[in-house]
Amino acid sequence: MRWSVLVVALGLAAGAWSLARVRGPRPAPRPGRPAGAVTVIVPSRDEARALPLLLGSLRSQTLAPARVVVVDDGSTDGTAAVAARLGAEVVAAGPLPAGWTGKAHACWVGARLARTDLLVFLDADTALARDGIERLVAEHARSGGLLSVQPYHTTVRPYEQLSLYFNVVAAMGVGAFGPRERAGVAAFGPCVVCRRADYEAVGGHRAVRGEVVEDVALARRFHAHGYPVRLLAGRGTVRFRMYPGGFRQLVEGWTKNFAAGARLTRVPDLVRSVLWVTATGSGAIELVTRRDLAAASLYAACAGSVAWSARRLGDFRWWVIAAYPLALACFLAVFARSLWHTYVRGSVEWRGRRIPTRGHAA
Image (cartoon, rainbow, N blue to C red; front, side, top):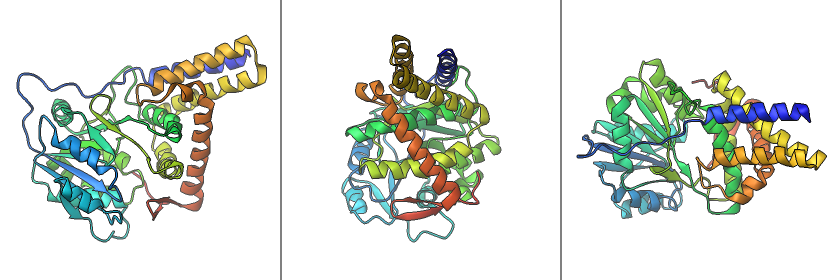
């Protein structure tokens, strides 16, 4: 029991350190609104169900985008028709060139059409608060370079609660939310903001065209060229609902990203993430094996850490926090699957496409 207490104490401390400073974009300065026209680029493949929420939120912005470009990446569900009906400019991505991932190609096609100073890349399953664009533009003006925001994760169906550990570990792994602000070398793909000239200077998505985790690779391009990279959390500014298509979609989505993302994580951030996961797992094991007050107290401390971490990143329910080992088991199983597909099979599947994973580096 003594060693379990030490493991849990160390791991929970590491988790608290990793998420000590989770904050989102601040409101734009008043009076006045930030200047500068914005092009919003939305790469979309079979997103007819998700787009109405995003496009509706964009129509009600306090700072209206100059253009909203939906790049249709070979959709078969009427994505283009839905986007056009809701007032977006729709562009076909065209055939996927060899060596490209679909999202990177769609983002590149959309960016090439932009004529504004600022580009905002948004996934189709996101939605913004009324002053979301205004906040993003103002926050980008404070630092320049690449700004990326992890959307606040909204959940609807019970299986979506199983994304809990993925959200927390991803936030810990980027190393941006510790006590001291640090230059980022990662990004959150669902929401990225940059100047068009900077994007072109680093090669844009063309330079990371074959990367499975193109967001991390793009951030590293900006960092390598001397541009700052800042990461923020999205609560109050941008939200998303991940994988509404069912549990299988959730498994495929996290399988695609997680093992490759772990490989690109800096060692100190990876260690703290592993310590936290190990600590919460130890708390669960102690409760099952000992079933006494001390073990229950240890489990309660772990559940408290899970609650404190997860509720800052998404609207995860009380029952999944109380029974957090369910989410932990899902995380470990899908992470093992991701390792197998990424490093043994050499490919992952996503939205009907096979994406090679061997030989790609940021």
